[in-house]
Image (tube, rainbow, N blue to C red; front, side, top):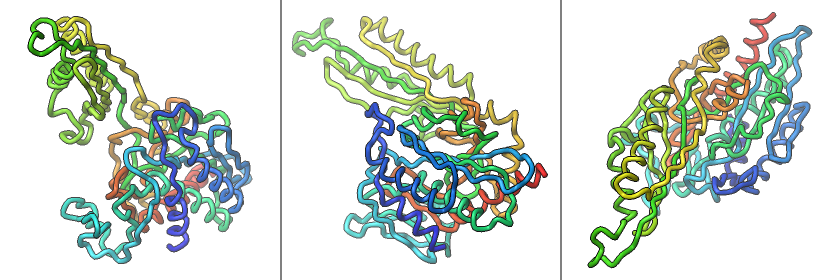
Length: 409
């Protein structure tokens, strides 16, 4: 247990927060600090064909120890952390033999991780938890995945009696800002399929995700003295409010679950002369997704007809539901499910209410379901991970490698 804890703590203490405003890859220079360390560690444990390109994409190979041809599989994780919450000076806390009660993350700020609010905590009673100190995120998304992959490869290298085919691993920057697969060389990676180790709680196994788009609405107004404004003033703030009021109020992240889609406004600013807001559009169903985008166009057209063409809408697709690409090779999901069951982990097969590198990679020709990495409450100060979940994820990786070989032999 201590080995995997030490590896994980080493990674999360390195700030690798990505930046959506940056035009470079990786988007932040500090991501190189962990990337270079990972290259060193892959070499140290005995991986072969270890490489890092000019964009900080890392790949490595564990050669087959069989004398027959079996499918080449891969495992992929990202090393950046979310820009949603600070990742500077991460100071993890270790809670041994968790007693099921409140965890005081920060007594000075009275920040408490409580099972009264985060009910999932109770399923880890008696286990070892790693939490934040209440001032930063933790970074289990997805440094837990990297920890598990490297630990699994190290185990396979040290236990050659476990037979496996060629295994490829890949670590990427900038997944948290939607660019994790943008420069991933699928042809060079040369795997028949792969798994992202980027899910949340123990048992998660996902092969479908949201269809996703981003939208930016810009409104140009006209400022006139309010005492003489009739039929002259165009208040951009008021029009922005009018636009948002037309969106269905029940279709927001806080009101939806499962396969229900939503509109999510995440930035807004304005004055009388200029207002703008940004939102994301999400839906698992492709037809519903297209209808959501059309609703934004319709609202724009309607309000432009009323207020004089003062609104511009910028709408961009981000990624699509990987189910379309994975279902034709569903046996790769079944192998992961079998591996979990062999390790006494109950598979939780459900759609991802988000995105993953696996979505883009699946559309690039590398079918890529997503497996749990073990963390909870990503992207904020209440993030935590049970060490036992990381150990189970590591065991699942090893078992998948073994099963692929056995099913081929």
